[in-house]
Image 1 (tube, rainbow, N blue to C red):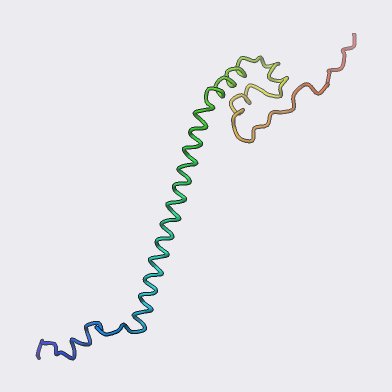
Image 2: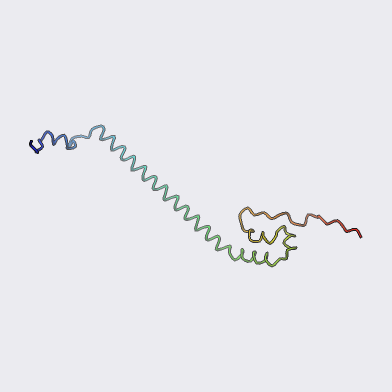
Length: 120
């Protein structure tokens, strides 16, 4: 058996040096479309990550800017008596939750409701 490859066999193994065939053009079009899709996906991911980072930095800056006001409000509420807290519709438990989103204290105690007078 001869291990040498003939010119005819080599021509079958090598890509055609002449004009690319239709399937080669289709393959190139698919390759370019895949590259464009990949680039678009990477760009979208980078935009989302940059947006998330910007929102995080903004939230951190807002928290740092409002921290002294929040501490002062917290300390002022802690100094109130239980009755004063009840008058504004809060309890001691509510003080720790006052800065949570969606916190709503109970209605204040100034709705004109007076206890019935005691019978002597």
